[in-house]
Length: 116
Image (tube, rainbow, N blue to C red):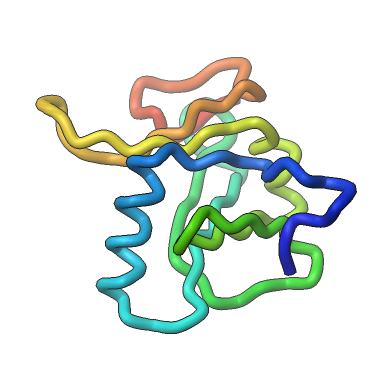
């Protein structure tokens, strides 16, 4: 399933750096049909936390978007929390890692992994 015609904008956008890194990690896994699942769960120091993991399962109600070689899947419960967000990847002096810029977050914690 791909983004429907009524919903032409993906819920989340991946930066070029994020696409490159996720594609590298997916290639290293060597499994067909793996995609990146991005989810929001209750918990974390600010109320909600992000989860990202590789997943080959796709539910009919998942929001799915393709970014070149990377397929991103978001469950319906997480969709409203992630609408308009951007997944970034940086590899700099402060370390390497993914971060999510989320316009829906009213607050976030210092670790960058949770929001409220």
